[in-house]
Image: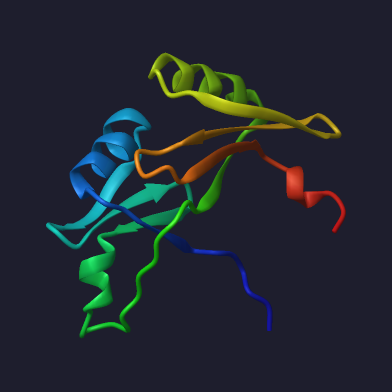
Length: 132
């Protein structure tokens, strides 16, 4: 039995409207679910990015409660030829790129932050397919 992929990942955020403006209005992620004061969900390629108000999800009764805090990290994979356009888009939005890293073998990634200071990364497709 093998796990096929990580289908969704979750961030806990302070302000769902600020989060929605960042991921939807700026980065262009499609909103696929929203409950005011509780969560907003986005399509991120073949995956789903769940953004929860941690105070509301901590009190969940329909599903197991969950919450968290702190600066989390996640990476978005893009085709190699889309890497530079994504980097330019982030820069043109006035979002600071904290670092660009050369992973070797022709693979690059860059790091930036969302409004909650979560560390986001854009990485070239295929990087983790080699070795390991």
